[in-house]
Every structure is written in C-alpha cells, then in structure tokens.
Image 1 (cartoon, rainbow, N blue to C red):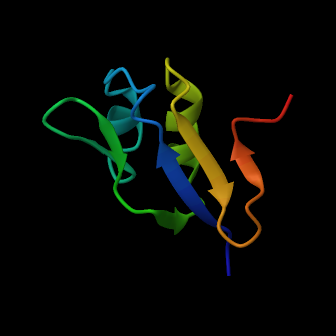
Image 2: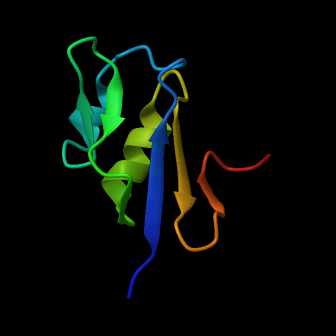
Length: 77
C-alpha cells in the first residue's frame, strides 16, 4: 500500500492564482471567491499534487503523511 497524504490549503495565504487547480485538477478546486480547496482531505501520494504545492506562488499548500504527520511539503530548512 502506498503513502497517504493530508493536503491543506491556508486560505488566509491563498491568492487564488489557480495554478494548483490547473496543475492538479483532481487534487484542487477553486471556490466562487477563487480560494483553493483540496478535493479530499486525504489522498494517495500524487506527483501532480506535489507539483501543485511546489508551484503555488503564495506557498499556501502543506502536505503531510497521514500516518505519521511527517511534512512532505514544504521541505524543512
């Protein structure tokens, strides 16, 4: 069984660019105020979702492993 991720978007930081929904339409959607929402709270590990988080100009997306809480993105510095 593969990794499961918890995906969160900080809507206080989200600027509604839509890059996440364009990069990973199965992972993100924009609401009527152009705020991003993950389509599911938990998902299988998905390269497109990771790419979307990396592309977010506001750095509003956090991904953690569901089982351990280990941060997948953003990388710890």
